[in-house]
Amino acid sequence: MKEMLTWQQVIAQQWYLTKFCFKNAPGFMAFHLFESIKLQVSIFFEFTWTTNYILTVAEEGGDFRKILWCMGILMAAIAVSTVTFAIYKHYVFPRGRQTLYQALRMEIYEKAKEIDLSCYDDKDFYENFILATEETDRCLDRFLVFENSMIARSVGIVCTTVYCAYINPMALLVMVVVLPLELFCAAQENKKTVAARMERLAHEQKREYGNRVFYLSDYAGELRLYPQMKDRCRNDYAEENRKIEAVNKKYGKQLFAYSLLREGVLVRVAKEGAIWTLILYQMLVLRVLTGAQLVTSRSCVWRASSNIRLVINSFRTVAENSAYIYRIRDFLQMEPTITSQKGEEVPEGSGSLAVEHVDFGYLSGQQVLRDVTLAVKPGQKIALVGYNGSGKTTLVKLLLRLYDPDAGRICYHGKDIKDYQVMAYRRSIGSVFQDFKIYAATLKENVLMDVEDGSREENYRVEEALYDAHFTLEDNRLSYQIKTPLTTEFEKDGVNLSGGEAQKVAIARTLYRKQNMIIMDEPSSALDPLAEYRLNQELNEIAKDKTVIFISHRLSTVRDADCIYMMEKGRIVETGTHEELLGRNGKYAAMWKIQAGLYADAFG
Ligand code: ADP
Image 1 (cartoon, helix red, strand yellow):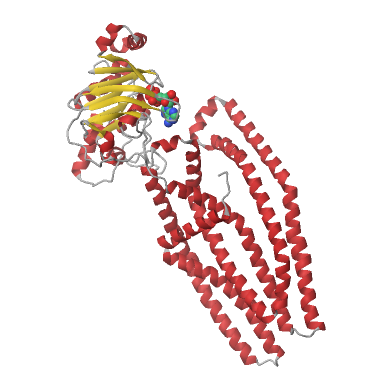
Image 2 (cartoon, helix red, strand yellow; image 1 turned 90 degrees about the vertical axis):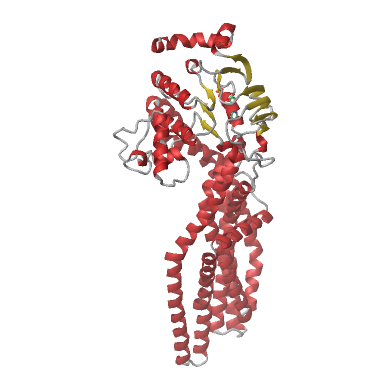
């Protein structure tokens, strides 16, 4: 969040959030605004208007009944106000706030679902997105506190200045004279505080990284084995702290000077001195002011100027908050570029797949795939092999339309995949990725990856998919069978699966859907060689009629493929069956020879 917004942008962000809140929780917002305004109006009546009224009555001879009536009305108003505030605080506010949190998060989640994956490769987008979404709740909190308080305080300023203009307009002059100076100092102070904050931000982010390394369990095991890394992080943390301290020191003196000038000199000396001199002179020398008017005009000036000060102080927070809102809106306004050109349905049954002269790079100028061409007939088993970084996973991502090629095209059932409805096309292909995730949900939900209908048929199909993926449901830990919660994040009796078990769940996801084409990116890399061999035999049987595209490092698992494509530096360098490629004695054969020794013992 490097840049600050112009004041027009700040207003636009406030207006956006105001509309958003009123649209999603109108009752709550009306109550919220009412309570904020009520507070200022009641302060005005209780401390300014009533005091003036009682003192005036006292000065005019003191009709006690009038004062009693006034106090009675005041007490009744206070009682009603206390009740409405309690309702607001304990019922309305907690619920309304949750409603708004949820409404904004839902919009963000919906957008995140459709946004191009390529956005996540853009470092700036990703940083801003993370920052903004992490701030969503706090953003709303700050809005509710400051923005509404600004409105309420403005009402307070209007009440007191109008009343002061009525009682003693001269007293307002003091405020008007001192105000520009006060505004100038506050603006300078705000500017310096923001500048200091911006300078600290990069160091704070680095310090936070060091902090994360200490508390996240992901790092705990490794840091015990490599404790020196811990020392390095600790030193980095201390270093960043020193830099933050230096920034604080750099700005400290200037901030101290401005706040002393504003708080001390202007308020205490200039304003207080001037107002007392004026009203005492009006009362004692000119004799144009009564005692009641003296007290009231002093109170009005004090209240109005303290409200003005609070509004000015809020500007900084409001401006900062607007910068976060701006990021959130920026994200919500993004449109996906991976869309359907013709919105066509994907035809039923197995279809041919053709990749034609495809070029692709994640970042401009960095080509990852070069002139890739391959053809897959329905029901064929295709293997993509090659060393790390040769572009196999990237090609799979293009096949699933997670990215679009920079040049060339991909056709399924004879049509460019861009013609099909995006989600329908993706759903028509089963895929298992290396970096699949297990969710904090039941085993069944982890296979289903959808809302359950709870039918017996559904349970049966989930069990069948797990069985086909060689997942053992007889495990003692699975106390609730497919209803067993996975991960221990929320459930004490949840089960943490091993890498191999988790991989079988990921495979079951694909088998459950019974799609006609399956893409597997290193689906069995976490299994031991024998388990992998057995699973592959089984998968070949299950996927007999399906088209399968298979990526593997272990060439022993791909030798039965109908066609093997060997990739290197983003190009397909060799094509053929296992025997053909061995006979060619090229790169595939060289890779095979290296691995053959490793697997010879296991497979004879
Ligand atoms: P393989 O699956 O063959 O190991 P990948 O397709 O994962 O290879 O990667 C091919 C190249 O693309 C590598 O150089 C990798 O660093 C790069 N790459 C992969 N993902 C991204 C990404 N999201 N952003 C930028 N470069 C990437």
